[in-house]
Image 1: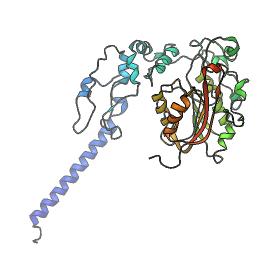
Image 2: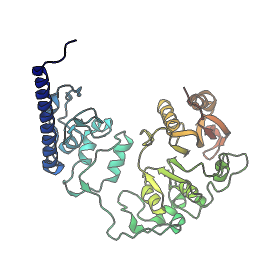
Image 3: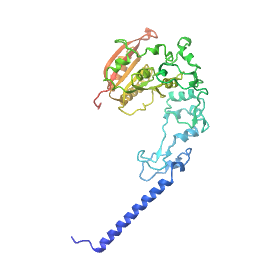
Image 4: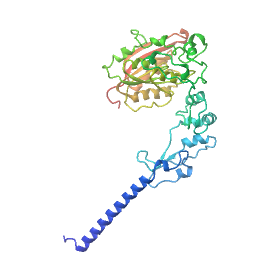
Length: 397
């Protein structure tokens, strides 16, 4: 093959010089723009992407279409939060989009009247005293609630909690809670409500830390329904149960009991006629304010143990319960434990419905105890199941 002519060599040299000049120029422009513009110099935080913004596609991107549903009955502050927000620096490879959509429950839009009341506030001001309203929305499926740009009230005479470990078994100051959402207006009322109040209250006696809570889960009762913490931990090598979750954990006595054994437990709880989340936090353990219908906010195969007492039972729609069981399976690490504590149902339901449902999830049975639930009378034919289940070490597919 003939060698390149001098003219060709000169052309190649000129092309290389031009390419280097172009590359240098683009790098300098990138440096200029990245140093000249910051998040602070972009749109104000109250500005949201308009329908026109969302309807204008960026070449090469597969963006969602602009919403077409009627939003006229939704409050402006809700739309300000829930609408797509354009990312300050455009397309982001992690989002695969130039727009981010804040998380908010789909069911929120089904209750526009309640939502309007919840989202009506002065931006940068104080939040309304509306804990009961917020919880109503959560229990209706508006979960997560939309974020708000206001400051919640705290007790004007707030008293800091007791130090550890005194806080584990001490009733906090009444001044640690805003009481307007509850029938009881102090902890003395809550401690004594089992004997003073008629009717149903969730976890009616659990604020009395010197009553039944003092012995709960302390020691198992042989082959009965009440397993002990040390008995359950004994199924695993010492130190391998480290972190976990208690679903619907009342005032978090289970978490305290485990904390005393160097196990960290997060407790989910609603505030059903009592300041459960405030009380949990005052004891020095972590509350998580979510309902049973929400996907658990933990990554796959991460937790060592999940516990639930009374909450997972036949009051939950069967399909939803099935989803919840699989979500528990999802977040447990291989070899992790699911302690199903006092699951209740009626008559033949355990054999015909709930036993097969639980078995379908794929847990290994370590302990399975069935007994009669007699507190509301034998004529109801109610049953209890306490089970210790293990996620298999091998992949489930």
